[in-house]
Amino acid sequence: MSTRLPLGLPTGLPTRLSRGLSALATAAALLGGLAAPAASADAPPAGGAGAGSAPTVNLATNPGFELPSPELADWGSIPGWSCTGGPAEATVTTTAPHAGGSALTVTPANAESTGECAQTVAVQPGTTYTASAWVRGNFVYLGATGTGKDVAPAWTETTRGGWQRLTTRFTTGPNARSIRLYVHGWYQQGPFSVDDVRVDGPAPAPAVAAGSVPTTDKVVFLTVDDGWQRTPEAEQFIADHRLPITAFPLPMPAATDPAFFKRVTAVPGSSVQNHSVSHADLSQLPLERQQVEICDARDSLTRLFGTAPTFFRPPYFTWNADTLQAAANCGIRTVLTADADFSWGAGNIWHPGLLQPGDVVLMHWTDTLASDLQRALAAADAAGLKPAGLVDYLR
Image 1 (tube, rainbow, N blue to C red):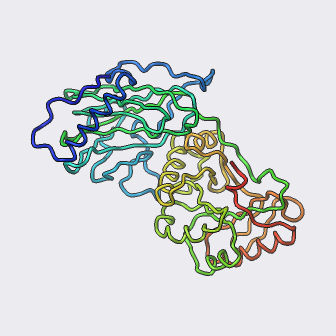
Image 2 (image 1 turned 90 degrees about the vertical axis):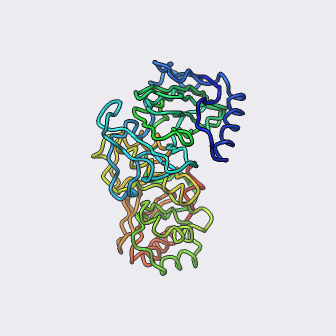
Image 3 (image 1 turned 135 degrees about the vertical axis):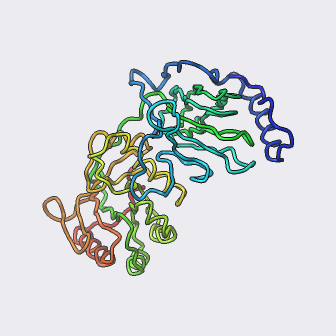
């Protein structure tokens, strides 16, 4: 990759652009020689200390910008991607894509924007990955952060109206479990397009499926799904009894009232976890669309609550092998169902006898939740169990 500064930029640049050029010069000096040539025709093979004989796959979510947005997704969002300018800048277009039927086109809205779009990719530590993308436009960049090591971006001064492949290679540090892949343009350089993105390397090990927590501690775990009906009675009951609650809200109701979910998960051991974007039966979807459902929900909840979920509750408790891999590709360690259901006045324990240590209890954010919690707590008391937080037991 060339590490020189972009040439031929227009005069009269804004202050931010001047600062950006200075920062780019410093980065180029520090990172020179760490990335593959910007116009590399073939991606180097993935491998490294953590790869072993694992097959090389593309870990990027919605790499060709072909997948539809799930129902209940943010209006105008690009599935799998987070773009700083939102739909005002980033759109999926069908005009002359590199391959397939569509590509991403970004038109920075003002002189202060580079039109960045990014996604989080789960990786293995100590492993080499190759990132690549086909781009069109002037001064387009592809790079990764969070690798544990400095990685220079791949970039091109101009693609002269055609498509050009950018490629960069990196090896993750010993503690890296995810990286942030990004593409962006440059200040005042106009629209650019991106297609056929790849992050090639070994996939994370599939998530583990569980219906209970392996422990002999006399504890039970209270989980509450969806989030459409939020009542002051349930909130008060949780506060009065200091119940550690694991909430699995959908992103839309969570975004409607994030303060509520922060309050009801304020007790130590509580957390907000992943329940997909649209509550679809994931077992009926291919891996790529399952990955969009889980990764997009992860990104929404992380923006709202500041912590990335590590557990996933499959809607309707339906899942398959693709679900476990898609969850792992989104940084999820456990796909969790339950052993008992106390929703809507029910009291079903799906094994003989009373609740047992490590049991997971399902409930929902409904108008009956306060009484459902009361009955679940009484069932736990009858079995000599106390509520505990999943985050304290599942690592």
